[in-house]
Every structure is written in C-alpha cells, then in structure tokens.
Image (cartoon, rainbow, N blue to C red; front, side, top):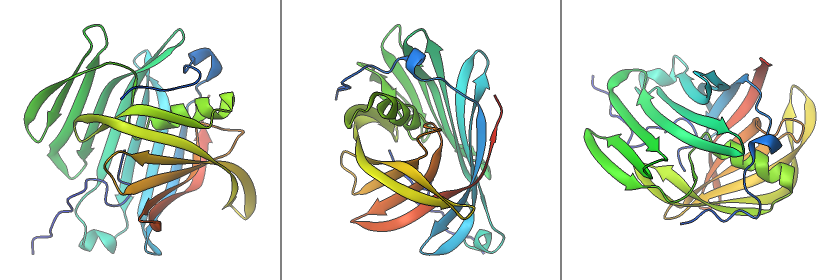
Length: 244
C-alpha cells in the first residue's frame, strides 16, 4: 500500500520560517558559541510522534546547525517522511553569516533543497524541486536553525523586537521575533524559568514559540508550533550533551 506524503517536509516538527531592523547588530564577540547535541520529544495533538535531535558544532572552520528526526514504529506505518536540515554559518570578527542550507528527507535521497550564499556577489543560489533560482542578498538572513542565534543575541542585549529577512521555500521573506516575557518549562521534574520568544512569518498563519533557559541562550528547551492561536505540535527537551 502506498502511503501518501505530507505537503510539508516538516509535518512532525514545527514546520515553518525586508530589511534587518536590529537595534544592535549581532556581534560574534557578544555571542559565545558552544557545541551541543540536544534530543527532543516530538508531540502533536497529545500524541508522541518520535524524537528530534538538534546539534550545533564546529564544521570545516565554520559552524553547523543540524536537525534530524526519527518517528516511532507505530507512527511510521502512516508517515513516510524523516526530515532533516543543515545550516552552515561563519563567525568572522563581528559577523555571523549563513553559508549554506540543506533540507532533505533521510528516506528519500532525491528529495533535497539547497541554498548557497555568496556574500561577495550578493547572490543566493537555490535548488528547489529540481529548479535553480538566484535571489539578491541585501542584508543578513536567518532560517529555522539560525533563528536561535538571533534569539540569543536579543537575550544578551535585552532587545524586545527584531524584523529580519528569512529563508523559506526558496524565497527570502520578512519574519519577526518578539520577546513575550518570562515563563517556565518542567524538565526532569524541575521548573526552569525561561525567556519566551514568538517567531512569526509574513504570509503564514503559523507561528513558533521558543522557550530558552537564560543560562544557555542558544538552547531551546521547548519549541511550540501554533496556528490560529491553537497548539499544533511541540518539541520538548529530553536531554542535552555539551561538548565544549
């Protein structure tokens, strides 16, 4: 029996994501990077779908975010997708810039989307659904993984609101990250005070809420996807391994 594929490559995790209006620029000196691997429980409609692994690590004299997913045995009967994404960026002096994005499916090696950033020429080259396109770069760009860098910079500078260029489905669109205040997340029966940020994208009814431990501003403890005010799915931290 052929299983139908989801229209969204990120149906099991928060699927998202003209100018950069930051009160203070994102300085590498203000944002120490630390390698880690975090494992999350993934839920939707109260049902556990599987796990996701988010990592940040040095990569060929650059840095790389990587997100992978694994569905549980029962859910895999109905869902064939196993999405992953990689985001490579550089840290040069006071600049953090995307270099490449890869989005794919572990179970379908032909289903791949890439974006490469040439900041010297001001061009982004995209391969999506077998077609190549070029986009003009005018300012810094964020995506689903590197948005955590922006959130961390906002936490460290006490910034409340940022509007940025955001990569989504081969295009650069406007997105907004807003600080909502403090909250808490229960991890291993311990209530951790968090800073909450909401991520909205132009033209989308879906938004994301990120819950960060102020002691580790790059690590989201909880990521909640909402649509029309209702929770759609969430990723909650199970464990984290700090590697540097």
